Amino acid sequence: MITDPAYITLSLPGLSESGFEVIIRENPFSEAESSDVITIAALTQAPLPNEASMLDDIISDIAASDNSSKTRIAIKWFAKYWECAIEPMIRLYDEHGIALEAHQQNSVMRLIGGYPSIYYFRDNQGFYLSKAYQSYLAAMEPESVTVDSLYFDDEIICDRFAYYLMINHLFSIIGRMGADGLVDEGILLSFVQQRLAAMQYSLSGAGKMFVDRLLTRATIPAKANLMTRVHDVDELVAENEQAIYCELPNPLMSTWLHNVIASDKELSNLSLLNEYAGARFQASYMDVETSPEAGQLAVIMRESVASQLKAGESAVPFNALMMIERDGLLFIAGWVEQHGLIAWLDKLIAVVVIPIWHLLVKHGIGIEPHGQNVVLVHKNGWPERILIRDFHESVEYTLSFIGDPSLIPDFTSLEPHLANAPLDDYYAMSSVELLRELVMDTLFIYNLTEVSHLIERFYSMDESAFWQRVSEQLEEYAKVHPELNKRLSALGHTQEYISTESLMTRKLLQSKVECHHLIPNALHR
Image 1 (tube, rainbow, N blue to C red):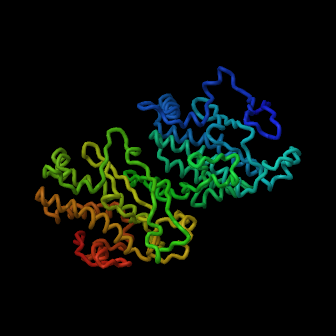
Image 2 (cartoon, one colour):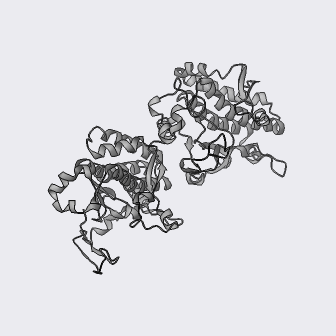
Image 3 (cartoon, rainbow, N blue to C red):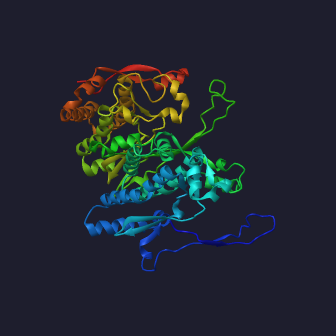
C-alpha cells in the first residue's frame, strides 16, 4: 500500500470541501528501482503508430532472453500478474470486507526479470467498506463508523468492485495482450474463469458473493465515463451515484464458443469475431403484437476483422467468392490462375467446411455460416483460415446432442423471457435435424452452391464434381473420427432428400412461421 500521509487544502466558510485539496503521497521507490515500477495504465496504453506497446516490449524481451515464444511468455506473465494482483484483492474483500478502487491509475506493479512481482495500491480514498464487516473493522479503527460514506451494502460494492477490478483493470490487460497479438483473449478469459471457479471453494465471505456474480451474471456494471461527460454529470455530486453505471455483456459468461474452440486443436483455423457490446431500444408501452418495431432498433459492437489478422494475411467476406467483376471475370480468377483450380478448391473446402462441420458433429453446436457470416482469411488468395461472426441469434444446440452441457451459458440471465420460451424459437432446438438443417442450409445450400455454380460456368467443372470433392473430404473426416460415427448417423446428412428453409415463400406469404421444402441432397451417394 502506498500511503497518503498528509494533505493540504483551503478552508472556506460553510464548505466541507473546497476543491483545492492536494494529497501528499509517499514515494517508496528509489531512483534505481524506478525503471522496474510501472502503472497498469502505462502497460495498457495503446502504442504509437508502427511501434509496440510497453507490455509487448516487456514480453518480447523476456521471450528473446528465454528463447521462448511470445505467447507462452505472455500466458506465464498473466498468471504471475493474477497471483500477485487480482487474487489478493479478492481475498482482501472476502476476509476483511475491504474492496479497493483498483483501476489502472491506482495500480502500480513492480517487475522483477520482467515478470509481475509486487502489486501496490495507491489512493487512500479509493475503497469501500462492507457493512457486513462493520463491527470487525470498527474494532480496528473506531473512527471509521463516524464517516457515513465509508460503509456500503455488498450489493453495491460487488458492482463497483467488478468495474474497477475487472473491466477497468483486468480486462485492460487482456485487451492489450489480444490487440498486440500476444495471446488470444478467449484463452485468458478461460484462465480467469478457471481461477475464479477454483477460488469459490476457499472463499466464505463477501468475496464468494463477488465471484459467484462474476461467473453467473450475464452483465457486469460499468462506469459510464463518456456518458457522464455527454450529460454533464459530476459523479461525485450526482443525486444517485449508482446511476452513472451501465451494464455491459459479461465476457466471462459469453466465452462459451471461445472455450470450446480453444480446447480443440482441430478448430485452430476457426476464430470468432467477438460481439462485446450491444444496445436495443425497448419501451414499456410497446409490444411486438401492437408495435412491430418493438425490439427492431438495435446495434451490436463487434471486433473488427483487421484486428484479427496476422502478418501477411488478408481477408474477404465469403460471399465475395460468388461475385463477377465488371471486367466479366470472377473475383477468384486471379487466385485460381495462380494456385490451380483443384488445389485451391480442395484447400478452400478443408479450411471452410471441415471446421464448421467438426463444431457441429463433435460439439453439437450449429452456427449460421452463410456468405456474410464467414470471413475467409488468405495469403495471396490461398485459403488459410476463417473468421466467424453473428452469434447474438445464430447459434443453436439441442440438449440430446450437445458435447458438454455444462458449458451452455445461462441465457435467461441475459434475457429473462427465455426462461419460458418454447424450443426452436431461440438457441435451444428440439431435434438434431434442425441443427443439420441450419448448418447445411447456410453453408451448403445458400452458400457453396453459388460457388459451385460459378465454377461450372467459368471453369467447366460440373457441379457434381464440385460436390464430389466436398463429399470426399467429409468421408475422410468420418474415417479419421470413427468415434463420431453414431453422431454422424444421427445427422443424416447423406440422405437422398433434405429439408431446407423456403426463404422466398415465407417472404411472399408474409408468414410468421418458417416455411420448408424438400430438395435433392448433393451429398447423397
